[in-house]
Length: 253
Ligand SMILES: NC(=O)NCCC[C@H](N)C(=O)O
Image 1 (cartoon, helix red, strand yellow):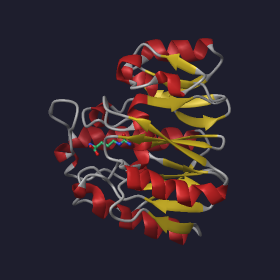
Image 2: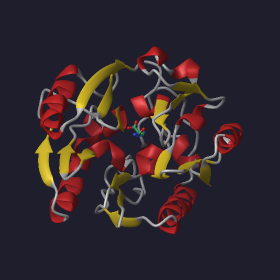
Image 3: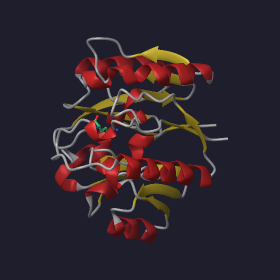
Image 4: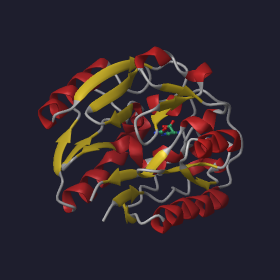
């Protein structure tokens, strides 16, 4: 069975880091309800969810994607670019070790956030310029090369993470909101979408994507292409530069 890691939001969620957008009030109770809706949507689509132990002192802990890169049975524990987020990785490592994953780690001076890592087939694109540095990319390349993956560094300057700018549909078409994509020419098959949150999809199976309700025109575009769309409201997390991808880490069964 397919499993996904999730981590329940900290009561301090509203204090989460902001880099590219202005702070607006975050309702922690509503966020918790939205998180439960996100988890329920994964489960309804056949994904077993595994909770990483909460890290309530870390406001951004719900964005569990940033703490690890998983390829096959190898879990590369990240070293987040923001010092405030570095303590988040311990719980992820403990959980994945308990599930039997081989563990590797990004070490200083490298930094890498999982949100900067986009995988498709055997290619792994890594956003450079925000939370992830050159040493982080080099270390990831050295760890994933023997697993059969090719790591490619790509510039990210307009958004927090690479996957805030682009993600990949089933089949490999890369979707992005063009004003926020540094270099769409990186991808041979690039599809511009009309809304920023439309750039964020979680692949649930070969024909189904999970996305935010805040991108209805992109949803229609995807449905026209024959995709099935599951949409969830994650508005409180979007106020903190989060998106659907950040709230889980998919583990293939
Ligand atoms: N992978 C992601 O896009 N994560 C979002 C993290 C948002 C959080 N407020 C942060 O700045 O780290």
